[in-house]
Amino acid sequence: MKPIAFLFSLLMVLVFSAIGNAASFQLISTINSINGNLNVSYYDESGYTNVFDDTYRATSFFSLHEGTRYSTEFGEFHALSTASFNEVFVDWDAYGWSESLGVEALAVAESKTVSVFRPRSLEEMNPITFIDTSSWTHTFAWAEIKDLTTNEMIFTTYPHDPGYFHSIHTFSYSGWKSDHQYQLTMQVWGGDANLSQSGGISTDLSFVTVPEPGTLILLLAGLFGLAAVKRPVAL
Image 1 (cartoon, rainbow, N blue to C red):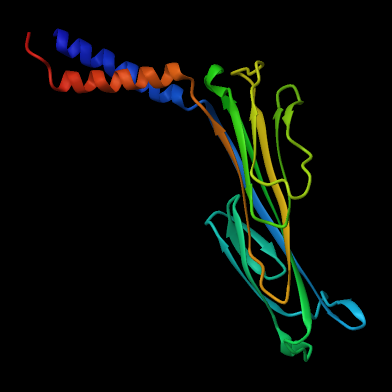
Image 2: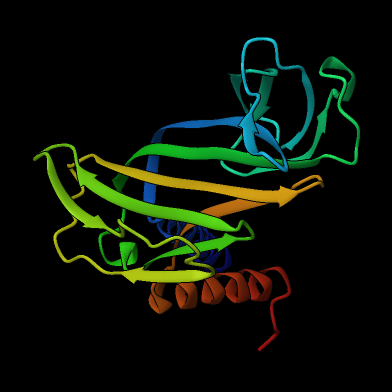
């Protein structure tokens, strides 16, 4: 084998090994679900009266990412782990209401993602960062990791207080085992209440692993080496 061909083959092995190791876990399965409900009441001088019953008629518009199918009182929708409940419209004519009445709409939704994974590179599983970004009036967000092989709960951020916005949690664990399966659960619950107007809500809870610097250096070195092989310098 010519030296140039040998170098090219070696560099290809290094590059593809680095790319493979950059993914720190093998995702086995993921289940995403979102469900929501709407509670509407109106108030006058006599106080609040709840009108959320079987005869209540409303139209709601969801803006959701394409994904898992789920059902609410208002129909069937698709979603991933990010939900946006944009508008709520009350069918005023159903009850003979007028817009001069005060109306409170409480939109509540829950997003849950359950993933099963197996670590590929034990060092690169650390650190893990959970980022919670919410714009709701009241928000609960939590994440937990469970070792399904031993049934051990190894990490949890639960519970959070309402109004716990823009939280970032970093987690490191020294007991990762490549032959174990782990379950990651991320859940967001929130609600937004507005008087006499539509409510908008948006939540997201993300899961991030950061590769060790050694993997990135190896990958960059392989790429630079590949470029050098394609354009060899005459000696």
